[in-house]
Figure 1: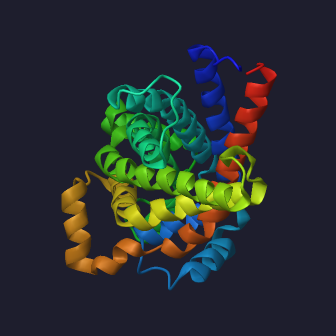
Figure 2: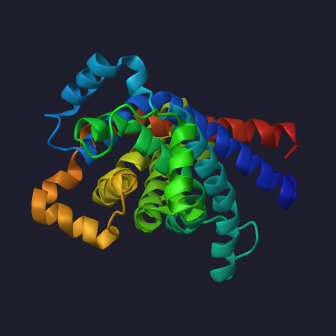
Length: 305
């Protein structure tokens, strides 16, 4: 019988594996994320994904597509490290609430509930660094549209200093409400779709979920990501606008921003940038879960569990 790892060792393994997954996610999908943020914030500026991609490359070069990579790495590493750490702990909470044994196997829906619960904690880690990332990614368009003065230095440190100077430490949590509104249902769909997809692959191949292979594992991760974004994309669009537009002054809250977009631009504006998001989701989320599952298995085997 294999002994269960000590809770502290299990937490360290989940945290580290989540960090590895977050790194893989950013490195495989950053240019698409940059296009998404630009199109969400300025939907009338670009005719579509290809136009946004080529315009950015022509005006700013390749580095323009990787703008915000440093805070994106911080955001994704911190988010996924906390997410997967909390995911393991929240599974124990679900077992407790459901009056199950400590090591009892959870259903896919129960795991989806654990993922949704864990997103509350990851949102607190994600919001500050995502605010910096979104502002860096949309800085060129903010200057071009006259919303901020031209010629401002756009580095991580200058954005951090501006937030601290104008809004104080709490300024980093602009968009927290919309982040929570996005993450809680989004990660229910994310983990639910991921686990259900793995279950179907396991049944088809006549094996257990941990032995389905690399390609089915990556597809399951990508499918989970696609379900997340299709469910919560309009909420993410509102969050991005709040975080970027607050650079030019006080920005309205979630509901006022949401209703303002519908009233002045129509509901379809909330889906601007969906194409690069869906293109990005399979390689990025596939890489996320591949790195998470393989590094977690390696650490568990190394620790003798």
